[in-house]
Length: 366
Image 1 (cartoon, rainbow, N blue to C red):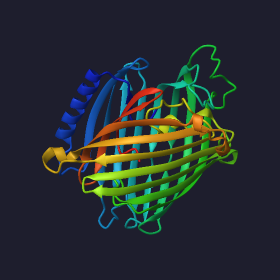
Image 2: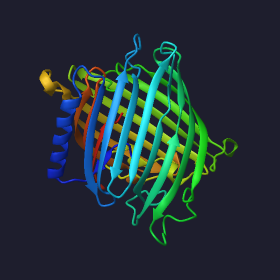
Image 3: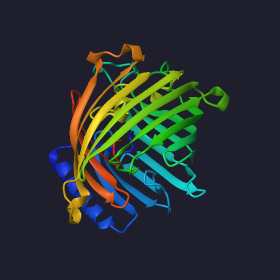
């Protein structure tokens, strides 16, 4: 499950949800606070009713460059009436006057999801529901060479097992890597160059990063593979209230891969379900227009966006085909949770040939 609330709702449910969220945000996120908190709730056939809460506390050490993320602590918790759970704890602290930053993110969930098979290029004909129990522990350390360049090291530890699935599955069965309970461990290395003016809501500059994660039997992993990610983002301020943002994203895996670790279009691209299009390689290109039209009172914290995205998964980059290209477009609303840091809550509505998807989450899509 993604770290956000993903819903298909009618207008009345959506309106009620947004009213509740904005009311709570207005009460708990004042101008002089460095923290925000909001509860949420919804309903789906797989989970019945569920409720959750999100909280974040941020702290900006003195002399920390503007484009650095602030020190922070986050908690996201979701509980369903069917005793399903999803939780994320994430933090960041700075050491040696900002020369190093470290974090110890922890994630656990036991949540229903859907398997459509591996390598789909068109709309899958069949699907199967299953429930996955999963937790991961990924401590990292970033070394800031200077104000714009950072190198990072991350330790990957993940355990996963399927605890409930449909009987006599023709799709998800023991021949699929990742069907059995597994442990994967690995190490990752990354380098990043960032010239933006703000980490949460950039209006100018760019961000270029490359990361490789290596999972190996020598490190105790049940699977032996590597995963690479190339990410380029560009931001341009059109006016004081309007920003154009663009992103080009590449993901690739190679080796003996559990199906949960394939690049997943729905995990990055709005308008598509998780796990519907997974394959060895994935690319995404998207643009977004972000506008905060007002400059007084509470309205200055309310904004709007319009976006368009295109992407594709494929077994190799040489097999990119125009007919397999997926496109989504939509609009969204923004509410600034923490004005000093420009941390936003976003509600996005994406449309594609696959239908309509909505997501509500803190932080921008990119």
